[in-house]
Image 1 (spheres, rainbow, N blue to C red):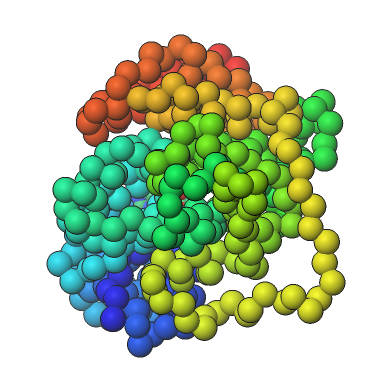
Image 2 (image 1 turned 90 degrees about the vertical axis):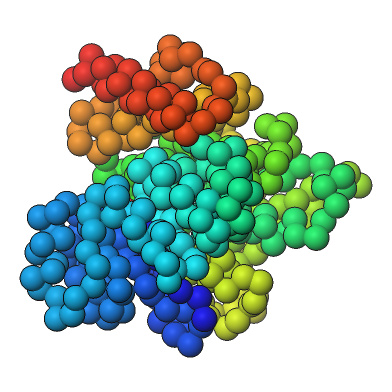
Length: 384
Ligand SMILES: NC(=O)c1ccc[n+]([C@@H]2O[C@H](COP(=O)([O-])OP(=O)(O)OC[C@H]3O[C@@H](n4cnc5c(N)ncnc54)[C@H](OP(=O)(O)O)[C@@H]3O)[C@@H](O)[C@H]2O)c1
C-alpha cells in the first residue's frame, strides 16, 4: 500500500490523480491533500478521501474547512502547509502537482526526506534541477516524472546503456496556433490561447503550450532528469499527441512510446512503478484507422522554444530566470495586462538583462527567481 500526499489536489493533475487512486483503492491511500484557493473542491475531496493532513492557501480557509468537516484532520495553510503535507510521517509518496515555482521547496524537502516524489511540477525541476538530484541522493528519495513525455522517456531509457543513445526526442502537439501565420499568432486572444486541441490542462500550462514554452521547459526537464546535454534533446511536432517520446540510437534506429493522451496513464505509471496494472484508461485502440503526422517546430513563430535551449546551454540560474519571467508574463497575459506576443518578449528581455550565476544552493536559485520576477513585473508595467 502506498500512502500519498497530493500537493495541488484541486488542479487538473490533482483530480486525475484522485481518479487513479479510486481505481486502485487496495494499493493507494490518501494521507494528505494540499490545495490553494479552491476550498469548496478541497472540502469535497476531504469528504471522499478523509485525509489525516490537509493544507489550503490561507488560515481563513483552513478555519472554514475545520468548521465544515465532520472529522478533525490536521489543518495547515500556505507554503508551510505544503511542507507539512509532504513531510507527514505516514506519507511515503508525494505527488508534486502544484503549478509554478511555488512547488519547489516541497518537492526538494520530500526528496530530502526519502519519499518517492512523482513530479508533475516541471517548474521545480527547471528551476532547481541539480538541487533536486542532490536532495534525492542525500535523503534517498526517488524522483519519477509525471509529465507524459518524461514518463515515456523513463520507460524507454530504463535498462539502456547511455553510450548507445544518440538523442531523445519529445513530441509537441504544436498547440492551438500550430498552423497560424505569425501575424495572427502575434494578436492571439486569451480565449484562443486557452483552446488547446488535444490536452485538457490548467490555464498556465495551456498558455505555455500555445507559446511552446511548455515544450521548452520540458526540454530542460529532460536534460535534468536524464543527464542529457542540450544537443541530445530534440523536439518533434506531432499534433495527434499519441507518440510521447522517442529514443534515437547510434545505429540510426528509434524506439517510440505510444499511449492515449490521458494524464491518468503517466500518473498511474509513477504511483505504481514498477508495476503495470489495468487502470482507468482503456488499452490503445489499434483496430481503429488513424493517421499520425510529424514535423519540425518553427522557432520563428514559437521563439520561446529557442529561448529554452539558450537557457539550457547557458546553465546555472538561466533556466530559473526564464521560468520566473514566463510565470510573470503568463499571469499578466491571463489578466489582460499583456499581449500574447509580449510573453516571448518579456522572457527574452529578462533572460538577457539579469545575469546568470552558478546555481549552487536553493538560496541562489530563489534569489535569481526573485530578481527575474521583479524585472519581468517592471517590464510588464511598461507595456500596460
Ligand atoms: N495538466 C496537465 O495535463 C499537466 C501535464 C504535465 C505536467 N503538468 C504540470 O503539473 C503542474 C500542475 O498543472 P495543472 O494543469 O494541474 O495546474 P492547475 O490545474 O492550475 O492546478 C494547480 C494546482 O496547484 C494548486 N496551487 C497553485 N498554487 C499553489 C500554492 N501556492 N500553494 C498550494 N497549492 C497551489 C492549485 O490550487 P487551487 O486550484 O485550489 O488554487 C491547484 O490544485 C504544472 O507544473 C504543470 O506544468 C500538467
